[in-house]
Length: 130
Image 1 (spheres, rainbow, N blue to C red):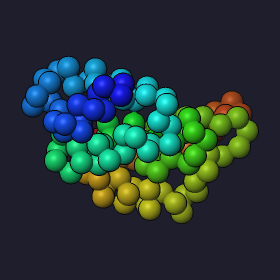
Image 2: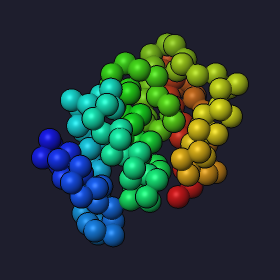
Image 3: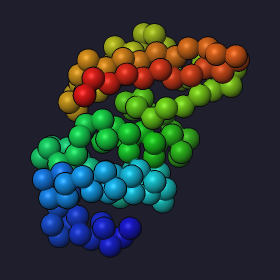
Image 4: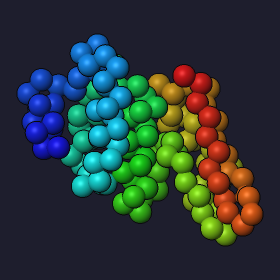
């Protein structure tokens, strides 16, 4: 994956315009780049790609939040699906407008967020209008 990071340094992040439908393969690879759970290596490249329109805002949020989640950090956009046994997820109803505003700040509009209790588990409920 460091080869890909070197290519990003040299040529920038390739979007759908350059890769066509294969851009999904790149995003899946980056999503599972678990050595960067703190988002330190990918963040500068993802941020530039987002600003240039090379990555869809939902994919940006998925990658960032999955890495945060697996680093035991709180998700920023609450885009990565997760559950919690017995305890509510670490956001309240009062936090939802702030989270939705963060989503809108990166280009995710008309999205929804809640958590529902199902058989002793709190389940993250997410909706995106793409």
